[in-house]
Amino acid sequence: MAKDIPFCPLMTAGCEIDKVCTLDRCAWYISSIKKCAIYLLGHNALVDITQKQKVYNK
Image (cartoon, rainbow, N blue to C red; front, side, top):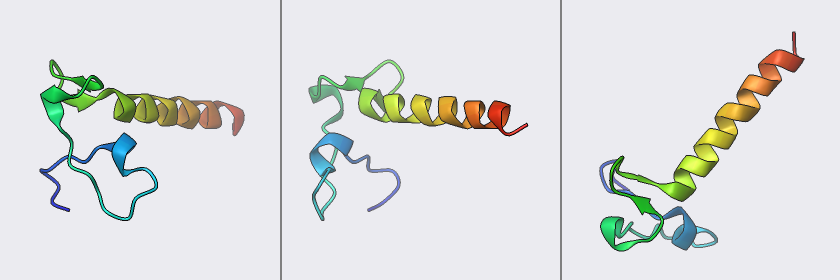
């Protein structure tokens, strides 16, 4: 899928075909930053885990 066409992580889970994001028509979409709330939750969790691993691996 092209990088400029976002896909829905919720609707795509468990499917072989990516489902296109409906953007402003979705309750999970944050239009002020043009990102999906589900994506942000995952991204922030990954950043948090990465920071914790750096602290514990010293």
